[in-house]
Length: 136
Image (cartoon, rainbow, N blue to C red):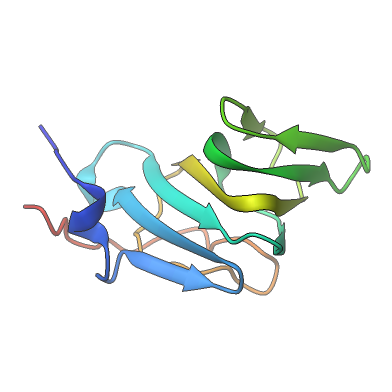
């Protein structure tokens, strides 16, 4: 059984940040689950243009408000607590936090190693290395 608390990951190599966001990688490739789980915060008033060509991603909002834009269609969807959105076609998208920080629980398949930040295309590279679990 794997038990990890947010504070176990805070301020470690698995707590990464970029322009307008930070993410605690709670479950990573080295845990052997076949997916990774992240606690991600998009800072209020920011937006990120993202395109995960090598990963599928599902996001569940637990706090804050914002919106996600499907770049291909231009369609915009409101995000608030209780909303889930899945990028099931490697969808290029823009995520914005409009009211408070947007807090998301994110699941990636395949899993990330845990230290990645976005590449020039707004995604992660295909083959992550492994990173030890700090709680083990």
